[in-house]
Length: 582
Ligand code: ATP
Image (cartoon, protein in one colour):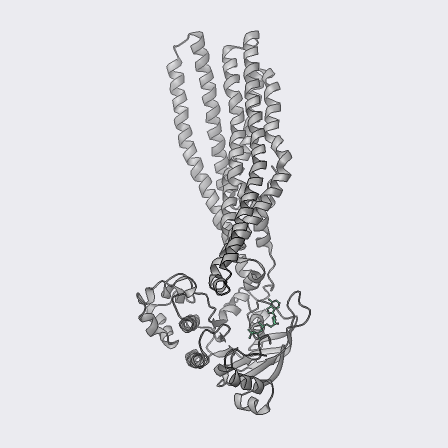
């Protein structure tokens, strides 16, 4: 019965409506008690043959029923509103926190499991907070009141009711620890299944290519069966719970009835008293019965509480160190970008991935970073965007360290274009406006034209209003890249990064695309993370990275003449066109 701290915290978000919902719930319960009392009076009159005031009493019962219906509707509405406040607030907080955790978090946590926590877990918290908690408070207050009233009428019935109530409320608690363990097991299996399905759906092309669809299906089936087993195991325990509660309720009511009959026969109470005892005894158990029902509704919230707490308190890999209040750096001149003796080691990896990297990307020029696979190019980009912070050295924009900018301003000032760019299941225009929600149609077309993708968008069935398939599946790799560039141009960030990570186009075409992109980039500081060489030979400056160190810096001709790593890469590219190999 102890409320999980995470759920208490969630309830505090909607203190007022929850309080109102609880008070209304109490009022609904009181109407049940009033009805029982009125019926007891009516029955006693009937038994005694006094039918005079019977009509009034029955009218009063009907009035109580009508009042209850109105109060019940009001209560449900208030509780739903309270639940919605909790749900929306919690989801917003978790999403904002997830945003702060950044992509680094999702490389270690499984996206499907996070989704399950965010969607199903939060729904469970809503049910727990808006339905179970008010019921719990009513259950803890109403039965003692009824018992006090009954003690005045006929103290002997307490002998039957008190032990039964205690057993109904606390008996199942003996199973709590087992239920919590089974519940956790069930939730973990559920989360795992969600994550597996998401991965299987997203990775379908890869699974098909590897001929692993059958094996994956078998694994998913096994996972489903495990979930079934976990559900049954949990149900078995909670059925014992329900069984004990029911037994106590039935036993208590029967005992109270017997005691009432005995008191009637022995003449220790009046006829009204006997009927009151009979009817109120069963009212005494109503909140307990309802509590058992709401417990099942809110149970998911209890199971998910640990997951929600873990997500909410997960530490971001970088801390906000900049001035959050400062307006995002928006200026007319592009900044100079400088890496100063940067060292970085990934968590849990023995050797540093970046070893004392220093170079300058001049303002308004194009600098390419090249190097064999695994040299650390993408890691440098992750450091620039502060997905991680280097252990030593610093990265500066116009002399101001990246840690001095607020994370939001920093990331808004650097637009990244890659084929990985996520396109949402929304219209082309919506996807573009993500960068600048207030952009006019003219600004959209201007950006699309500059990125060389306007004609292709215009040729789509609904032009800019065409809804893109999930992950932009209806566009080619190059089109997606150019759409991403249009988005980056709209964002008007002074630094543009072209990450050629997963190139789906041939090398010649890629070189053309990069040339077009660079032309469109205009007056910006551009960094090209090049995984192939053809794209970068025209860069103003090329930084050659090898094994996490800067091997050389220069332009294409100079580097070829110097005959180092770069020359070898060019030679390898000639003999094996395509991906760079070490
Ligand atoms: P490619 O051209 O193949 O994309 P790259 O030059 O971009 O390679 P990085 O992705 O920066 O190389 O990787 C550099 C090294 O860091 C690799 O050895 C890689 O295994 C390692 N690495 C990358 N990401 C992580 C991570 N999250 N945790 C641990 N090690 C990582």
